[in-house]
Length: 236
Image (cartoon, rainbow, N blue to C red):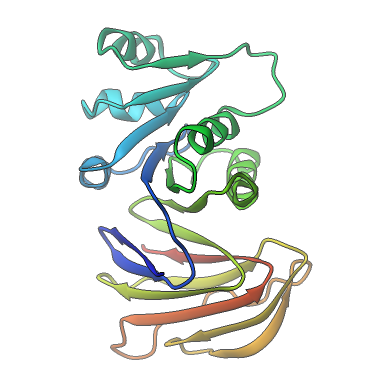
């Protein structure tokens, strides 16, 4: 029943997740490193949310779908998508949902039960990052599993009951647990300096941050029974 995911900096096993497809969705925040993006684009279907097309354009990575209103992508990037024959779903700028939310909805309709790797999330405006992370958390209601990732930051979205096993290729600078719902309980983490054993994490007091690996250990286990938990790792 486990789902296995490989990123350049880690390998993950999600014990209670099953996904039928794996989609790389590139949003319009800080563009991921070209080498990281090129590696991640291999053998995956690629979607872009508006300005995310620019990251693919600059690295000559042909996306499979482009969704958005076109208000943040460069004209060169948008024109390149047209020239490449990339299917485009263009929306009015006067809309309720963000481009990323529209892309997640379209993915859930075309690939039910997919695992979405959302990149182009970090950096830039806080409100955009906030919206993207909580949109991923809410994508569970669309039947999607997910993480947000680039070469420096990764966050797995765990909806309990779930157990995450990580094998790290590179040693992260920080490991944090972020309650994305009002309460997450019970939560446990092993393989770090400050371990937790069946605790309740509350959204209004997110104290389980800036943890670190023990000695030369490169494995982490995190579990949550109830609630939505973000498992965040950062590399310098």
